[in-house]
Length: 387
Image (cartoon, rainbow, N blue to C red; front, top):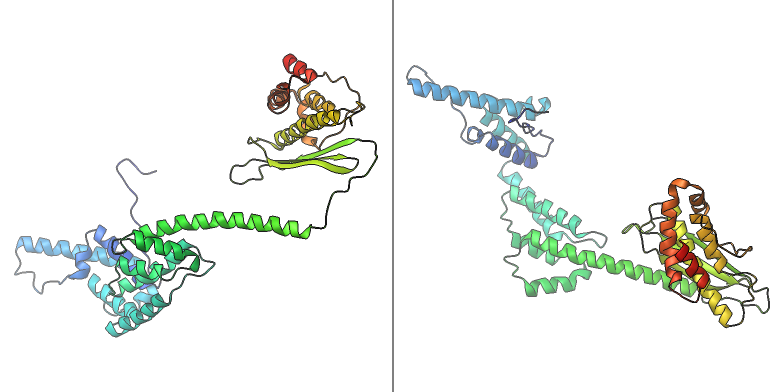
């Protein structure tokens, strides 16, 4: 913990073999310390101190002390194996100039590097699997190196290069930008933000296209499949239900699913994201089972209207069984209950006194309220009023 008024000293940039990057960091570091003039102009020790006035001697001592500080920074930044190759180390300027000649090279070497960078810059193309951010990073890396070697790299030159080297999916975006914006005034950052927005739209569209293709592939592969409905049978209605937990990574909602079988054939099914964010697998299972039970009540009424329901086994039993199981409220007049779902964890909800309130809230929201609004089902309405 630093004391009040103090601050952390900036770290001295270490030379790692990349002279262009290191020299930029080191120059900024020395400028922040107000020592850069000693690297640019250098410190020349006077030949005779006797001819100097007191003020001049004081000024000379200050400059000498500053030069020693800059040399100290350079000694800490440069590895010993590199320092051993520098013959003249009398002043900070001597060390800096030696590093510049050794690693940056003379004018011919710089020109050669610049030619190679120009060729690389002109041949840059966005890859089909590359994102906007990655491509901009590659382009700006080369452009900044060219600037360090003396190339005049204005934003308009970089912008034009990027616009003509994007992949084909950005063609209409490029046309729109060229028609609606002034390219000479458009900055690289503005272009990048605009392209990122369009890229996100592409990604959402591609996700929808992939989902549609997956569905079409499934339909094509199951075109000869069907549901066989047999004559006769005991008319038993079976329901199966299950739920995942927080399967949607965007809103963390779970997905419920159920299927109803009559005479071993599917008559109703559903797979749908739950309307709430459940806090446990127990709650997710309960919501799935409750939705399935409500659907079972609706199917029972349809069967009654069709004259296919004999009253031997009622799907309403499922609702009352759920109410009794998850809230402790008993009231089902039926002894036989069609089993629904696999709610192993949810079953423990009823036996845990500490979770009774959670169970009642879920039962009220997903079982009683959806069904009590139908006045024809007086048993459920009475149960709701008692509840």
